[in-house]
Length: 103
Image 1 (cartoon, rainbow, N blue to C red):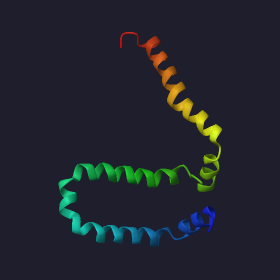
Image 2: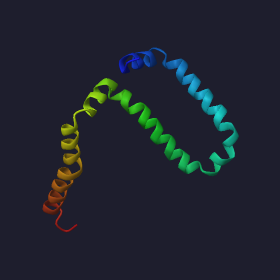
Image 3: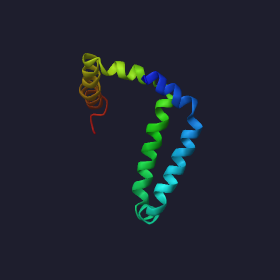
Image 4: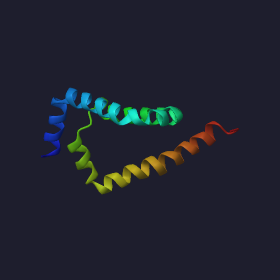
């Protein structure tokens, strides 16, 4: 099964999978309800991150085949990583020093 076929399958049968996931979560979570209540703050953060990771790709209409194809472009990935984690912070720091000299 290709990625595209899998994505189409999941999109066509979203409701049954969601209901199954909710039921599985309730059955799996019921025995550990006391532990979850004791760690409610951390569980809240994990839930928020999980919901973001599930919903965000749908909001930006992320295509899985395009993501896999982009992963094969090593030069592009290295360039984007260098820009995001080297160039942008250096430029940001320089601009902060110019426009916010007292901070």
